[in-house]
Image 1 (cartoon, rainbow, N blue to C red):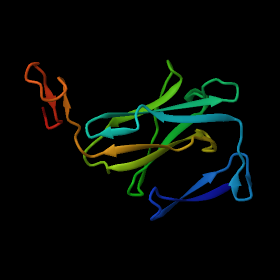
Image 2 (tube, rainbow, N blue to C red):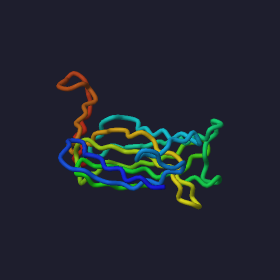
Image 3 (tube, helix red, strand yellow):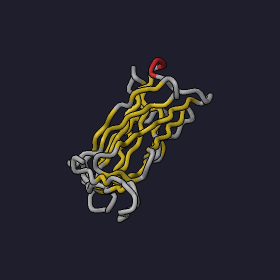
Length: 168
């Protein structure tokens, strides 16, 4: 069973569509929720500047409370929706120490600034059947360089350093 989900972008000026396979079937035009597993996605901050590291963590838990691992057939994909209505996806690496799926990178100056959203989808690796989808999270990319000052600003009585992100 497949549902086509149409959704508006953040500012309501355009829409996108995505086809989702419903593992437990459909009812009244929507997927029937299952309690097979839970997917939770988060990031460490809500706003990021150019040059900052951004990290996404997904927790995929089976109905018995144990992590759903790649060895058991888990395929986790994180979808990123930009403020320009473009999307991208990435498969995070599984960390067996924490039991979480993790991915990240450095915010580049070509990444569109504004409000982004992301969500995780868990699939069965052998069948591509969708087993769980996380709620969307929101974060903001700021395409300006953050200036930091170690001594709190104008303070010529204390030695410090300033970093503006311009190769300093």
